[in-house]
Image (cartoon, rainbow, N blue to C red; front, side):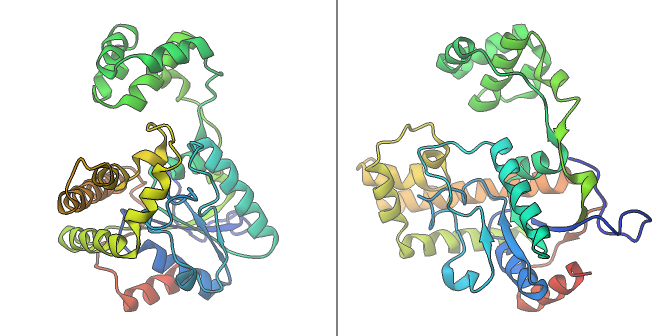
Length: 318
């Protein structure tokens, strides 16, 4: 991720348009802070969460409700049909358009989300990898992941050593790139294009609340999702007979509730599995946001409450 520093009074930077960024693991309080900041600045909230882009996942993605949004404009929430797979480059292009529109209207964009890849792509840009040969892609995607990883060991051993053997998506991507272009993905990634980090003044904050507090919030939130209609939401999704490999079908909670609806699991077991998946996801995000963003980005390690939200929103305004 670009070594973009938080707002500082450096010569030449004052004229850059401002963008706030609130990032961190799921259930850490990001949405409440984003809405508070947007209200205080007359800004708009732009989603940077990979699950909240899908129309089909209002409940399980914890998309802010109409009541929570109030009169604050929200962008890139629930705007993509679950039959499509939203990629990081697509989201980044849409986010850039929304940021530009907000600046043209004199509004402060407030990016909020926990998908590090989205944020990194927006700020740093993407590697200019050529289009993958369709036949190569089809062949690679048809391979069992163990076989694909074995092939990657021979064709791009550095990538194979870096990637988990069960990481289907990344293993397939690395293999199709080296086969289609003749160059490892890492070589392509040494030069990226299209990032906005050097064209904005970024006001970031990373939420990293105490782990015990976060785990309890994850469990409570999943239980609230069940009460709010998550089972019915997944039932509607299953009637669409979508490809099980689509992101919407693999979103946190969907496979576990789907197992219950198919009769493969008891409800209590499915809820427990959903809670566990949520906690594991939060742990991965926590680790990512601890290690990946630049060290100069402010971190907030307290458990979020209304008082702290007001305090942070005030800081981020300046």
